[in-house]
Amino acid sequence: MAIKIVVTSGKGGVGKTTVACNLAAQLAKKGKRVIVCDLDFGLNNVDVVLGVEHLALYDIVDAIEGRCRPRQALIKHPRFPTLYALSSNRVSERYVSPQAVRLILDALSPQFDFILIDSPAGIEEGFHRAAACADEALLVTTPHISAMRDADRVANILKSYRFEEVGLAVNLVRKDFARRGEVMRPQEIAKALGISLFAAIPEEDKFYLENIVARSRAFRALAEFYLCGGREQQKKTGGNP
Ligand SMILES: Nc1ncnc2c1ncn2[C@@H]1O[C@H](COP(=O)(O)OP(=O)(O)O)[C@@H](O)[C@H]1O
Ligand SMILES: [Mg+2]
Image (cartoon, rainbow, N blue to C red; front, side, top):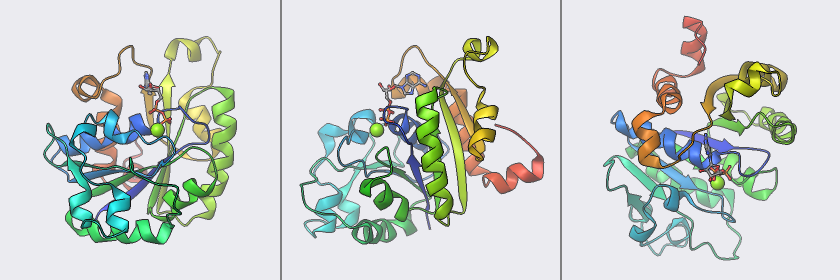
C-alpha cells in the first residue's frame, strides 16, 4: 500500500507544488512508484510543473464520476517511468467530497509506494479534503514572518488529525540571511512550530524540474529520509536533515 503524504501550507506560493513534484521525482529516481495527486483545485498546476499537461486525457474528477478507471486518469511521466500525475485540470464547480477522492486513492494505493497530495494553501474546505485523504503531512513554509504565522495555524490544525507523521519543510532558505540574523534558521522555525524539521530547501536561482532533479541535495535528502522510514529512523540514528 502507498504511503499518502499531504503537502500543505498556510500561505500560498511557498513551494508546495515544487516540493511535492521534486520529492516525487527523487523517489521515482530511486525506483519507487509515485503519484502526485493535485487536490489544489483552484490553482492546479502539478501537470505543468511535471511537464505532462499535454499528455492528460482524464483527470481525477473523470475517475470519480466514472468516465474512466482510476488507473486511466494517471499521466505517466515520459522521463521517470514510475512517476505519475493525477491532475485536476477539469474540475468543475461541482462539489467533490473527501470520501470520493479517498476511494480513488485507495483504489490506486496497492500498486504504488507513495502518493503525494498537493493541497491548497490555507485551512478551508480544500485543505481538509486533502488532509482527510492522507496518512502523513508535510507542512511547507518559508522563513518569512507571514508564511510562518500562517504555518503556525495549519500546524495546530494538523495536530488534530491523527497523522502518523507530521514534518516541516522550510523552503527558500537563504543561509546568508539567517547568518545575519534577518530570518530564523530552519531548526528554529521547526522548534517554534513544534514540528520536526524534515527538509531545509535553499532558494535556487533557476527552477526547472530537470535542474532540481539533477542537483538538488535537499530533495535527494528528503527522499532518502522517507525511504529510510521517516522520523522513526531519524530518532534511532539521532540524525538531522
Ligand atoms: N527553493 C526554491 N527556489 C527558487 N524558487 C522556488 C523555490 N521553491 C519554489 N520556487 C518558486 O516559487 C513559486 C511558487 O512555488 P509553488 O511550488 O508553485 O508554490 P505553491 O504550490 O505553494 O503555491 C514558483 O515559481 C516556484 O518555481
Ligand atoms: Mg501549488
